[in-house]
Image (cartoon, rainbow, N blue to C red; front, side):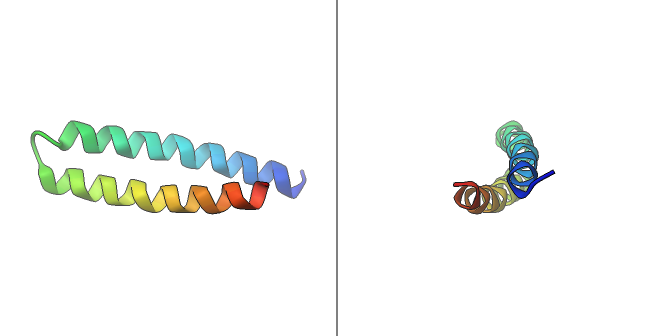
Amino acid sequence: MNRKDLIVRSEQKLVERYKELMEMAYNFRQTDSAMSDISEFKAIKLLNKLNRLKYLSR
């Protein structure tokens, strides 16, 4: 497996995790704002990693 395949695979995992965290943040928004903020912060950190991987895969 070459490097590009590894980057694409990890990119797919990060996208799935990002979607899960954003959905959790949305669901918690009405009931628990602290948990919503934490989930959103983690999602933003994952998005930053995802953007770095996209840069490497170019």
